[in-house]
Image 1 (cartoon, helix red, strand yellow):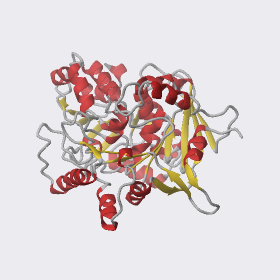
Image 2 (cartoon, rainbow, N blue to C red; image 1 turned 60 degrees about the vertical axis):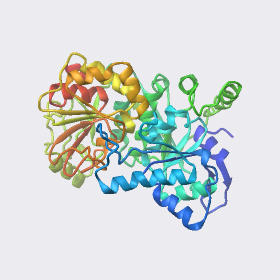
Image 3 (tube, rainbow, N blue to C red; image 1 turned 90 degrees about the vertical axis):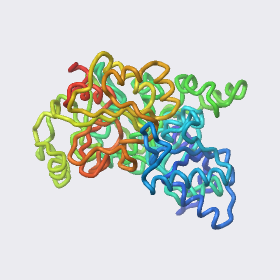
Image 4 (cartoon, rainbow, N blue to C red; image 1 turned 120 degrees about the horizontal axis):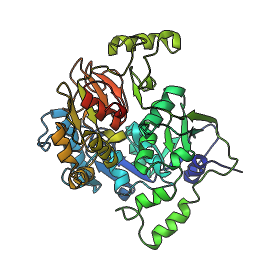
Length: 462
């Protein structure tokens, strides 16, 4: 029987299956951070259950850690408790943790791939919805609840209903300003925030094959924003070149053997999916969100949709009121107050290089505060080595320490009330970056260009 890659990986990991019940699914890798892990450790300790395989677990500190130069001092008592609890739990159990100054502390979905913990064909879970990022490597990676983290730590298994499958292909040649972030925003705008509900997406086609691993991670990261359980790209030579030599990647002959197995992780010709869609990106321009969810995305040269253009009317009306924007208004030229570069979507070295290219010999507008936050200590070190930090400083941007930062209001980095931010993160929900703050999602290039102009603009406007 011809099978797609999603079903192949799933079936390889089913321990037990019975009609009318979820499958018992084997989990290869568990990622932890300070916000959703404490209850899992506490439950295991309460029951006297040992962790089944701590070598398959990796922890880091990202959500609650400050990103200023004095990040070791956490002023917020809740955040400090979360961080200290993870540190203590890892010390007591022997779970590997990348703490600050470890050279690898950072956002869990940036750290996992850069140390080679993320590998093709693996099942990967984390108590974080954007675990889908790791699917870029041909892994089946998805976010779960704390109780499922507990089960996996104790047994290496969880109960899961088999997902539906969804094939997404981008066709056409977009403009030179169009990025992977724009591609996924265009997908979400077309199929909606529930368009892939209950599915795992496989991204296919020449456009995807031409992307770097970091660009593929950006697309897979936001799969969750159209309702998918996960997203993935079949591994290829681009994948193998990225993984070679990393800490957790097999070495020598083992790497050669692993590659042979990974090359078999493909969709059989003629295999079917539960859903399929083709996204036309011919001559496509950069995208930006205007409203209160990632579905509210338009090309940067377009006007804000009206109620007559379709959509849920109450949600549209709420979006107009919250963002203080009007139907049929041009999105380009809208004045902004903040720009945030970072997050598990766009906090990698390629993203920072793209921003540096835009900012080189330019200045951030006087009305804009710009945060540039590397996704990990490794990204930070690489940026310094390439002197990107000098470009950022000369432009007037604030280059900070690694963490989730302004992606979400769980640490000191917040967008003030009523202020408008162009952000490279993944969600523009009401209050996501701070109470009553306004978020516009965009690519690093668009965000950087907007910082220079002082209003929403693309790189082509410079």
